[in-house]
Image 1 (cartoon, helix red, strand yellow):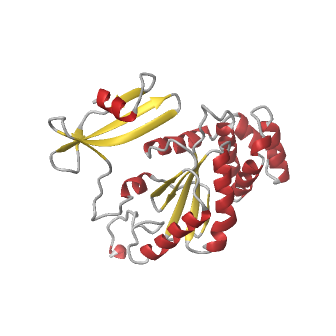
Image 2 (cartoon, rainbow, N blue to C red):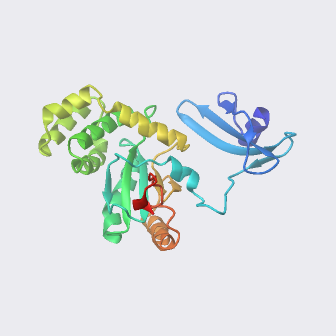
Image 3 (tube, rainbow, N blue to C red):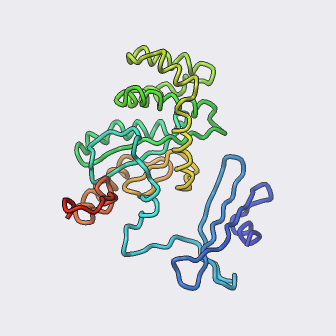
Length: 275
């Protein structure tokens, strides 16, 4: 299997190939195998369905027509205790995995911030998730830690930080990051000593790590990656493309109601009040 995959993708020996043990798949008679290629920070994961003889191999995604086609990713996306703006309970939820040092993330962030709430004043809720690519961006994770420190102290000020961090991206280095953060805290009237203590002790690192682990579980390997009601959009997307997808979801969810923040993902204890 490994030799076949290396030939298929032109993966040389420098790329590590990990092949999971086969498990039963949703397709009768086929086994499910996950193949992961990695080299340093770069990763690529692909699902294969293999006959029991090992001679037939299918690459692709299996959909269950009885459920939302993006259910697998929707089940993995967690938005509780994450920075958000827009309408709570909206039928369309946009989740952005981003890196403050990534220039493409800066472009995407500006596009979304400039257009989204103007075009959709009530129908959309947006959440931000940290996905710092440490191997290529040396101050991305410290910036994410700082952002979570801002969020802890004042949830509304997080979006000031978000916009400020991207606006200052080209002028920021690992060496001057702390001084710039202190200036931001003063300008935005935060409790500066408390904020700097949070940053210096990496008090929010676990929150950033948790977001990153969620991104890995979703097989994200680049930023920005945006999910619109579970629909994955990797890389740069134009406003016209994003707007069209959101408009489609708004209409679709009027009857489907299987995504957004009212997707039925609520667990209630049995009670006469719930009947």
